[in-house]
Image 1 (cartoon, rainbow, N blue to C red):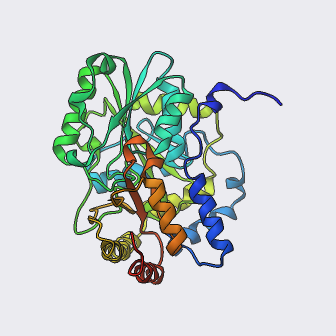
Image 2 (image 1 turned 90 degrees about the horizontal axis):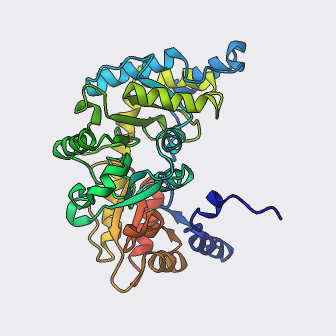
Length: 387
């Protein structure tokens, strides 16, 4: 057997394997699962977006190779959306690049900037791609703990000077997956100050900027980096418009970062299917009523889920944004042990916090992307569950 590359062997074991095994066992027993595990909305993509996609697929011009950096029309739509949403001006030609979902851009940016001997600052708990992509690039991930007592914000003052001098990229993500935490103006200002002092590229994963409740409006880091010298921001249409399977997103910000990411992409992929880009244009420039409707529905689900899990005596806090509720496991359990017990005895699936990094141990994540009748069923089962 051919030995795999070291980079593949460096990938941590699949942390959810035990949970998947338990799910299979429960299904075999005939129990219906209530799955709060995955952040994938059950709500269909809005009809106007689907209609634009259908029309675009019928045009033979869209059957050919697309441009590597994305259609200028799509990038202009992204820039226009940014102006309306954040009052940030962007040059569509040089400060926007189309992505095959924001995950693709996040995974590739370390390849463009980090190499052996460099450090990338990675939050934990956090989206696993930050760390894995850093390792693939040959750089060293430096873990920034996100702890409850700090509002799940990294403490930059705790990072050693010698690490900061080696750092090339800083990954942040607010509103945050998995904790649901949000960042205030002071945090973004502090982040930008750090980037300027140590010449670090800030990569802000803003996938959940439009999924917010109770009147909260998340901000863009480019509202603070007005000169667009130090920051890239990654957006996805997946969450905002229920387009997870469509694989369309974009990165915006510092022109050098956009250029280097685009240069890398020209050697790796052939761009996003143009018909999907036309659908993306419709999403960004068409009616935004579906976004308000989505948030209203998710806010109701959030409240139902919080009340359901409070019956366990767990302090479950309402997040101001994202699809996720982050809660402590009961005393005496590890994250995985509690999640396994919950599946075995109730058929309810939640995600162990340890799957998002060592700092996630002691917590579990609940996704509110399932229907209200399923949430009601979960509440009924939880009332008879004994910790």
